[in-house]
Image (cartoon, rainbow, N blue to C red; front, side):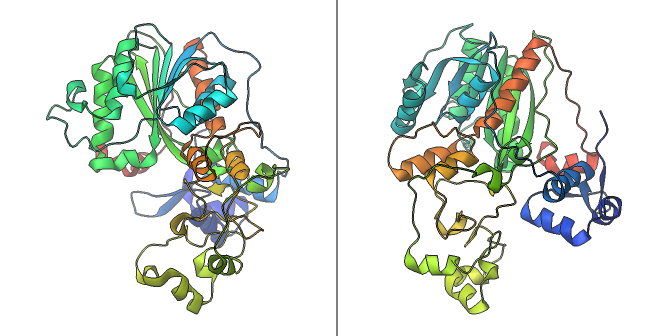
Length: 417
């Protein structure tokens, strides 16, 4: 496999025949990611720039689709904190059968039952559940992140009681699956100065698992959204199973492709005053595209505060993946306005961005539906994780090796020191 190159914007511009300003604009929009090298120069992945250049200047063929394998595997899974079913659906589409899905929220449970009446959905507090050895090959859970402030000095298994991660770890300890998968927001890496992730890893190691973790970027894994998730994979120590993660694709999926023939549906609306402001914002723009007097009027005290505040008065672009979806597309801090129409994204547009099929129905009020979709893991990301897990279990892959330069690894994982 060809080694990835990390070079400056000027070097990339010379090699690829594009302007430095274009590269910097892509960096600012979150389409590519920059790092600082040992000399404090900003560097970029050449392969990453190539894939964006290819999509914006060359390949116009639509890549949007709901991924699904033709055959089921023989592997089974328990899904904890199942939510609206994004991960579970994706892993089933990859070929993994679920023997149990646990979720506490009644609206999310109803969503799971409506769409998958054959799934064994258990609507209970996870603390009430009992598990048994050999119940499934895989345990997966997107546990909420907690402070671990009550944890003892050893930060071991017994010291994390009372946290929902403890319940995930308890399930793993009782079931003894071949593979355990944890999922969370990327901010977990720096949570509590990095101590939280270190505790989680040490606990999984304590109960008998080899552990690796990585940030997966959905925009390069068949999802029309700049959504990053931290994925933790543990393999039981008595098994010779290599740990690897899904490989990023050489393309992105922009909103134009995702919204093609999207069904009409309910959605929130803007108050008239906000609508008049957003009508002045171009596709891909935000509050800084307003005249200065309107910037001050709309932003209020926030105008004089630091930070880019790029989610405010934000209109999405047809030619890019969406920004990360939140639990509401109309909140002032995280607005997700349609590229052309002056309105928040609809429920079905939200679902398209999270790669739920159009047939997937969501229970509850419009606000509850937004919340379920916004909290979900994109189904296609779940597919890629499930597909990789199947390959790991089948012995079809080798252990993943980190290609990122040491100077960048130090930036990403400084907390581990």
